Length: 427
Image 1 (cartoon, rainbow, N blue to C red):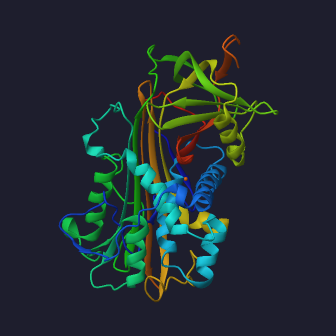
Image 2: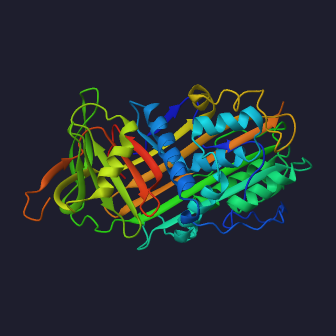
Image 3: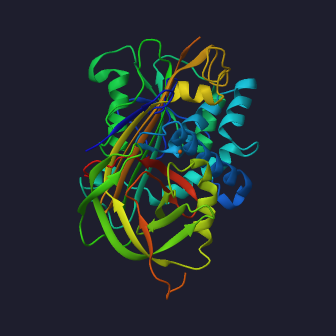
């Protein structure tokens, strides 16, 4: 059974301004505003400090969202949210630009270059979500990231804004009519685009579009990945202990295998479960109570170090299928984006007299014996005025509240993050 969480200020991120199109985000049948600026060829090694700052910003944003939903199931894609706001940042100016940098942690220099370099690394796993059969996971992970700007027909934006999106995100803008109803209307075009780039797992943008919409910035992330070592024994029922002291019946995967394992001096334990290539799921279990997601950097460093190598782990992990919808606007305003998400924001780099009318994020994940399938969409709407071989096996039994993240190992970029408070009966 899926579970849905709602948090003020979070949701599928849609900027009602304009949309962006990545090389994989084309929208047929609409007029495209092309920039003459080609996408820059940037590697992570070209901008190491800015890339590291962007990874840290992504992890920090995901931790904030987890902290805002302490007692609810949650799945989010922090990189999706940061990309969408990164596109907005290209059109922000003066104090609004400074606020975005300070609150979201964008690097002081080479911001766009760092995002470009990291996205290029993710694109090495690009594939068509529509070619992944429903209910299955591919032998090689598929990670599809798409950006799109949808622009109200006749609304003019600054050319440097379009050039920056093309240079750093490989994105362009398409013209739609948000005032029209039916399949020809802008909302229907956006919904078709979202469904296409999430493999049908999400079929709509999470923010409203109306006659006041001038543009919408959207980002989608889709992941389908098989475990490096499938769980061959299937699942068995067991009791999951909720934070309030009650229990629920869940389906558990149980197997002893060699995994990266880390335990802090305070007893918080973590394991890293690899997928077939370049991705892994990190699962964190506090000795009691809820784990503070601000500790992700310590956990990541401990698992990355792996000085003793993999150790035998008696792993017990529930299966789960969760969906989260978040209203990002109020949550991020409380986090410090008061000017950016208020009516006095300076988005003059896009066009005069604009403000963010809505920002939302939606994500969904299914974890079972074969692997993981997950998708997310962020939308921002704009209108006028993420031991040793001989040692005995350690026991890691995630039969109570735990946190997790799916990390792209070559860049350490967290693609999805979340927590399980009640896994339900499983997929």
